[in-house]
Length: 436
Ligand SMILES: *Cc1c(COP(=O)(O)O)cnc(C)c1O
Image (cartoon, rainbow, N blue to C red):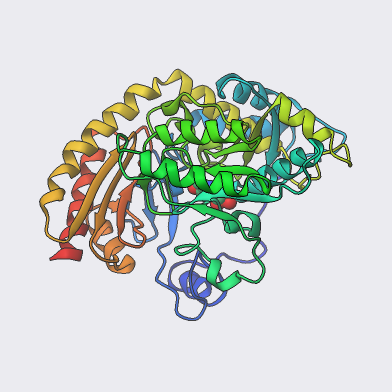
């Protein structure tokens, strides 16, 4: 039996009118929204709009579709899992997709991380990581340690716990200040992989020492701060944080939701620093961009301490925890990544972004150009007009979604040389349009 829709679907103008009137888009006004484009299908690294236009997706659907769209291997993994079961509750039940995914994540994760919690989105995984840290401190007999320390410029998600550790100025603190827990903010780490970190280390050390009795955990995005400003900082900062955490019995949470699965040139960005966190959050590229899934991977010691807290259990359990479809496609995505020689692909993309974007440094109105792995960023001296910029990119055959003063790409790893060149050309066109 097949499903036939009860009523004909809307298309064209009717579809976009309904969308504009009734549907919220991310960070968008319901009354005066920015225009949207209707995608009818996506294949390889291309999105196709309803007017027939095709664009190379330079955003990987918010950094997740690392293998591109309609990948035959990923499609077949989803289909096979649908034929077995789409979902069952995880309370009292388990299944092979969850176990197989946990095996893969443990094998890939930094040494010592071997207990896995599956959540349904990145933000929720950050909530779970925070809850784990608070419960672990209770289990260790330090219930007064309830605050988090982070650095300025970060982004960890849109839920309340996650929001509380986002950048206090660029984030959403002002609006929710009455509701948000008050966390501790160290300065943003200096820019560049090899920057001098002495002054920064001194400042963060002073803050930790002053508040050690209140701090449950330090949480940061390793090496690359994503939505908080595409800021690249020295791996040495992570070593300093690891040392401070150890000295003061504070846990280290690394949010690898954006950086995980090879994006920065290593499997997890913590590897740039040869540092292992106590708790690691994964999301975005985990399922190759197919379905919403996140994971929190934890050391056995932290897991044991959590169980030593008064309840004896970790107090979390979402309805769609460890969804079998999502776990199955995540397993397939990881296998595909490991089979496909991703390090050389990411390195080749980096070479091309470096040479393709480097000349924009001389462009008037450009403040900075930087790359790391398969990430290319052009920072302007002023805020980008998102509507105008994405229209210019589409005219150049590329999908870009700039934010603040940043025009950036995180392309699928399967982009050809020609496609990466097209992305660089479109970014240059956007820069011309914004700074002309
Ligand atoms: C995207 C992101 C999140 C939030 O993940 P969602 O799946 O959107 O909830 C958290 N942390 C980082 C570093 C991210 O890039």
